[in-house]
Length: 177
Image 1: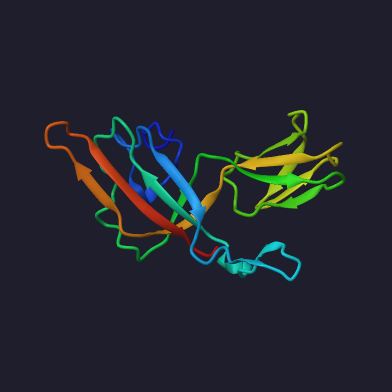
Image 2: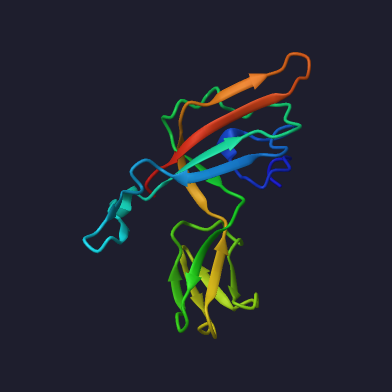
C-alpha cells in the first residue's frame, strides 16, 4: 500500500491516494526502435537494434471503482518520474552461475531467487547485482519488481457526470538510467 491507495504500483508523481489507485492496470511493451528483427544469411532471426534502445513503453490506466484522478493535469512530458511496477520481471540463472546483473533496478525487497523446484536460494543484492551464496543445483530464476524512470506521453481523463467514476490512462516511455 502506498499513500492510502490499495494499488501496489508506487508512483509518487501521480499523487495516487484516497479513492484512486483502486484497480490499476499496467501494460508493458517494447518501445519503438527497441526491436529491429532481421534474418541473417542462415535464416535465423536476430534483433539488430542497439542495446541503448532496449526500453519499454508502459501504459497505466484506471480500473473499476476509481473516483479520483491522479495528478495528470500537471504532467506535460517535461520531467522524468520513477514508477515501481507490480508485476515481476524475470532473469534466468544458469547452472554454476553465482552472480547476475538484473536488466533494471529492482524495487528494494522485491527480489526472489528460486530453483527449478521452486526452492528459495540464498542471495544478496547490491544495486542491480545479485550474488548467490552457492550456484543453483540446476537452473534458477530471479524474480523482481522493476523501478523504471519514465516520461509521460499524452494522457486522457474521462468522467461520468452521474456515476462520478474517474476513467484515465497515461502512456509512458522509459528513459535512460
